[in-house]
Length: 480
Image (tube, rainbow, N blue to C red; front, side):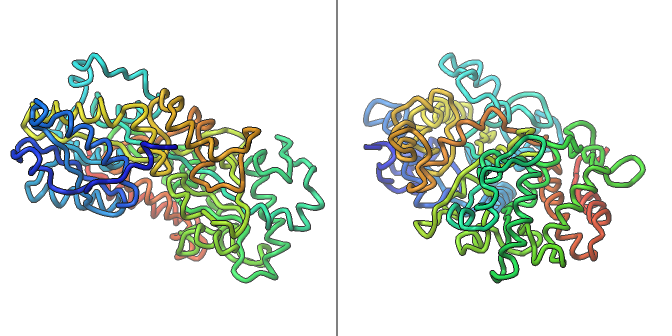
């Protein structure tokens, strides 16, 4: 039994000042985790609070978790609102783009969040080498040198596909053992595909089914931003840099004022796939920017055959027995395997209370990042744990064993939440991140708006890229 995974919450978000009798010793943790996903967070909080309870001779510090919003963007907005009103938490979860704003541009000494290096070096039990390298290093990539955040749990993107529908096509039956392209991808086996094979198969499927199935799209991609950022990295197309100030951060427009030629070509190919034309019999590729809603919605309705989405959002693609769902890594350009790393981290605010900051640090170092506790927390939320030792814990092994057959291969009859960790543990060495700076959040948003802008501009892709660039520059507040 997965005891740590099944423990019941005891009031996450309640005011634990009643436990300590001293609000000055309450460590406030702001988050956006859904109530049904907080069981193991509360297990961690209860363990910390119990150890520090004055009834057991502890120092009286306690953690209270407060849900501010239901998603990361709204959480960021709520944190800014509360900070402006004078409220300062000890800890908040979020993404590095948000944390960069809390750090600000006034120098490291003016940062609203703590530089953690002194706390790290003073803690002899805390070993940075225990973490998955890319997860830990993300917290050192801010505008000032040092460590400003630490991982909570992480995710990536994978490809979900409707096995029943795919294997029922004439294309599959005629080509299931045939190979395609320079990498000899097997057309009947999506786990072998590179990006060009993926697009080729999508076009063939669309030609076969697009004329007979209403609102059908062979391929879906939930995040326009991730589509562009991943493919730009794989194709060596410049995107952003942490160096410089203002417009110097954004590299996808050349010194001549024109979009990078490779970006222009790729964006045109995406536009041609995503916008209805006579060749496509409806669109081959559906994205939120081209369609207006997430591909996962269409996938569950059998209106999309192959879709790419977050592992953290696997529930949105779970067919619940309506069809057999296949899993694969995301097809990459020329097999240059670079996958988006997602998932929240934690930052620690400057509360002007050194003792409380040390207690908040202990909450993370001893409890949140504990290999077994973190594994249970991450898996409950469909994410991957942050320490290498987590992958050898009973929690992790018991959970992931539910996603494989007795022969140890992916069991397509089981729910995605149990199957995905067996795939993602093979991908983590190929994760990538984008530079973080004031305006990096806008860059992520704007690069994902290219198809939407191109639609508004009648297909003028270069004009769409220029608009995205202009909006990025306007949003950058660290101008020279």
